[in-house]
Image (tube, rainbow, N blue to C red; front, side, top):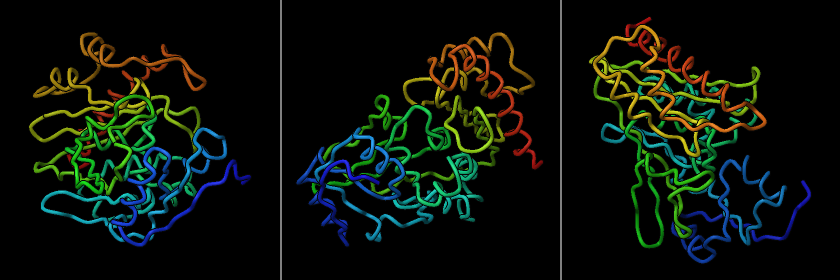
Length: 286
């Protein structure tokens, strides 16, 4: 790679050292974990950091463990680690399922879930999976820790609630306390590596409580609260006209190189129906 500009590279061994560097350089600082987005952004001159802080050597960022009914996923945990984790697959399986759809094997070996949500692109695959759980983003600065609910994390396209002096330690995903079925449905242009044209995450509990979240059909990934309210407590068979109208009111897709807004609107109905049926079949043990 041709270096677009000179920058300082630092690889601190402690969290405190990383936080001090982050506070010192603020918005002119970039953090390196997987680097799959960062390297491209520097190469394409979308960003010009004064310093790149490599966090991979800091132990706190490589933690993947269960904590008091929740799972902590550190900022250096890759998508491949999530796919292969028995803890993730047994406790929060939609996270593993959505991880499978991210880019290619080579990218998943380096890219991290936290890096994905920090990119805050509207099409990020990990967002619907995290949104259907009670998920908090854990951030820290030299002033202390802060907890940001995932539904408050995405502020605008490519913009998050993270402040210039903060580093994300990881995400804390609450394990559901009732039996449930989940599914992540992604629409792409072809099999293999592609960004989502539309994505739908679904979780259905045994008492027919629905949680549904979208990506790539609005400026930020978000829960479909009106759709959930309509479906809660109801048996599902197919998309009705009334449900379709509610779904369409929850999304605001655009036309871009990957799909037209009309195609996205049509396919969201299809994905919701397929996803609900798959989640229900998994809930029933199929």
